[in-house]
Image 1 (cartoon, rainbow, N blue to C red):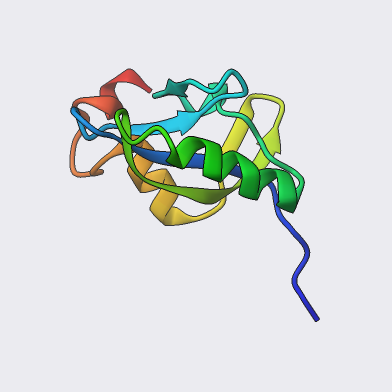
Image 2: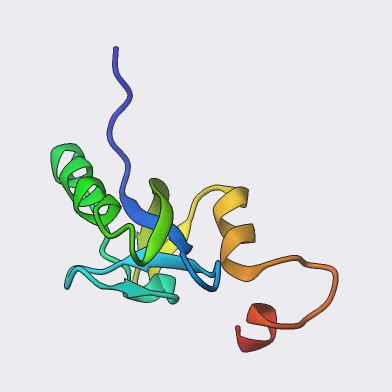
Length: 99
């Protein structure tokens, strides 16, 4: 029996800077997870991933990441995605200082 589909966002890395980026409903990339388009339909998620993957002049390695929808915006459900979003946790610098 297949598992139920969970909400997802399209994520990748910016081609030039390497920063983690998220695909928005406006077909643009943002560095803020709160601005990402949350996908709740599996077929729609697959199509959005195809759309995002076509932007190879801006990003590399696009894939779907599980999130949970909250009033503050999407939150990662897996440690890997939280780590990608905030960076190393040994001390506050870079992205961590901005949170």
